[in-house]
Image (cartoon, rainbow, N blue to C red; front, side, top):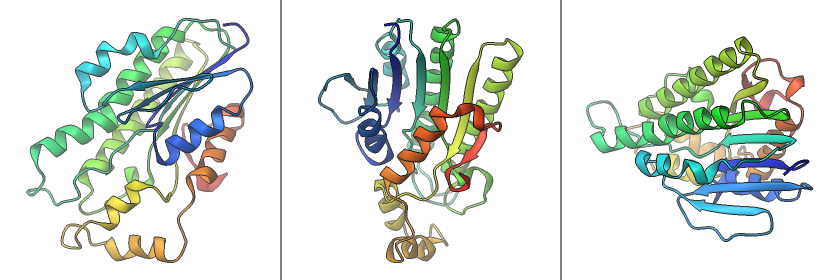
Length: 243
């Protein structure tokens, strides 16, 4: 549809994803496709797709539903879904947890970014990808080997995709965005960890106790600002705490 903006958003059922969904649906002439493991109800201009991103084969089978044809003024992919994983030291992590965290945090966004760039490479409008990353990608955090390494991989994938778009003059603007520390179910999972498996546990508990966590709505506003002003941000790697 000419003149319409299309947003594809993963992890749309809770936390930052839910806040983004609610914010995007307030924009005029906007269509949002929301992907989540939990079921969501359709709304005006909102199409929910129930997909478990850890199930790679199922995701591949449903790609045709995720990326509709159309002549859009703006197309945006927000790979927001992520999993903290099993917080444990190497030697104590279950094999399935290793498989799942990389399926959700690396393989799913890679498949979605690849399909998005294939589908819309000839679209003449604005084309933006926001991969929600983490400051943990550049840190050594005990117990977080899966999460930190998966976000580091996401950063590198985004950097390379931007380089490729620039070399082929495809016009995509891609970001790997660190959202800061948000008051979401992920933080609850972190606080539920054992100090035996995570030496920084008391610090993360203090973030909640001291009111240092951002709300999902505050961060969603920052993400939308980035999307609406991509030319103001030269670097692929961005952090909401710096703008």
